[in-house]
Length: 445
Image (cartoon, rainbow, N blue to C red; front, side, top):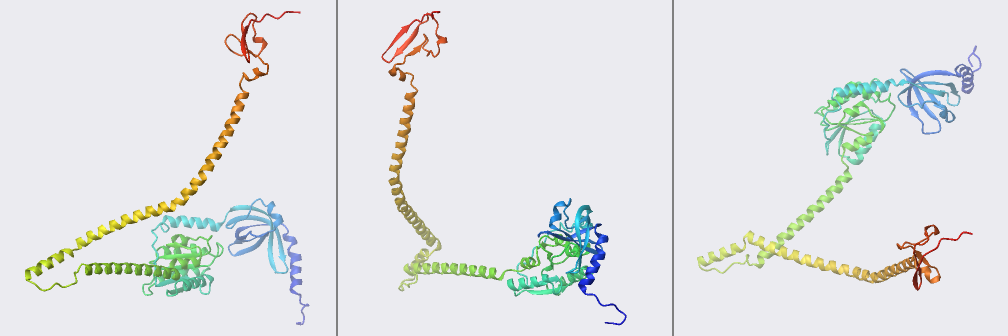
């Protein structure tokens, strides 16, 4: 220990003393800033509250989340209330948030939309997109040396198309050097001296602040004015920068950017094999056709020499042989044979179809008779039930049990004593006969 100095404190003891002096004065503090790197997949929420030149780590514990009136999101400018906590084990300072409310939209998001509107008015995003070369021999790659984006591009290219040359133009992925170095790299790779056919502009994922250089208007104009087609793979799938809108193709990741610009070796090999097999089959078919033609010519005697004779006879014979060998005659004969073969094929197909359907027809016939019998039995039963119900509704049925059917002069059934009028005739019907009666008025007392 140096003379004149107190005994040294341990790291833990020092942090505990700082914690004891720091936390009480900041037990309830309000702070405003922009939310970045929000992570809410677990039980707790973690994010960074930023402004230019400063950042503060914040956390919303699981038990406090339901009390927040507003949920923070990336790019939002918010006002937070909470307490400062010093985590001794990690030596980190965190604001434990207990209240959150919006303080207007984030500066970066507003600037991004303003830049997009200005550049879109210049027509940088609506220009015709150029197609990518199908089989490039050399590609230019603008990326940071040693970064994950460049490593992904190299791995995908080596796997899919190891014969393609890559010209790597290094440039910083963020910070003050990013824009000038990227502009210089783009200018270099599109030089005709290098022979590049397309450009890959790639970078790994990050926050909006980390990717802000790729929203620079100068860089966006350089991408739009590039002589070669440009494929961007900046950030992850959810990240979209202005250079993505100005590029000819936008990839979700650097790996996908490499896939878009390189042909797949295995797919090309499979396509080449398929085309080779098709060509071999076509050549074999043509050779069989030539062989058939040669056999026909041989059978007709066109290759046999006739005995020498008078010149006129020999000329006539040659003329006749020439007529027989005329291509039109062979074509007519071939057409007739083809028609005959088609007719035979149609008859054979019809016969094969009939024989194939015969077992199915027999099976259907065997199952048809029981099905018809079951259907008839079911209908007979329903008919018998209907007849019984109809008999029950017959008004003359109860006459056999001693009841009498009373009807008025018009033949309507009398169902109530109120409808009986003294002196008017009534028709009384029994099971075995019918009588007419005139009722008298009922006696009083």
